Length: 118
Length: 145
Image (tube, one colour):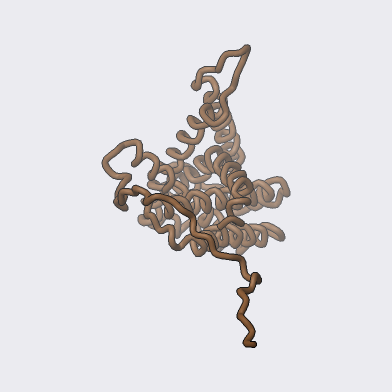
């Protein structure tokens, strides 16, 4: 436990940065790709249009950050939701590993998918 | 003469902290229900689950783009599934809830002082909303152009 607590500031920084990214960038993405395009409110971009965007290195870096940081935001919040909300404090270590492990796996998958796309 | 067994000092002695019995009333698992402030806190924390759902969907989109036009069409088809649409609708409300609570928290977490006076919270939060709007319009233009 003491080891985790000394890293608390680092994880809080990731949580905070992920919170900012999620707050500013996710709503427009979710609105477009999750609601407007599937429901036909707007014309979805063609495959070639999206690929021409994704081939740009800056867009790929952006997408990587968009996936990675919010996952660490999730890991921090979800961990404390389980601690405080459901009061499952006895599974401390397991929850810690599962939450941050999930965030690390998601980050690796994002890096792998974006590395040589196009 | 039999050797007297001396206590060894190899292991650290175990101390028992003295404390009077703590008074800790048991709190129900449902402590957050019934009070709007607590419920709001739990809803805000739960928004993180939908953040994770969004990331999974985005990774699937990127994976579909790697797979080619057919995989992309298949991805679009699965996003039209009514269950997925309902999930995304719920997600959208939770994410916007996260955005609003996050922006409104900033003035408390980082009070801005100007000329010895603390700026009103509205003025500290306002730039976040402006940035949100500008960035959203820009991304929308980039995707839709």
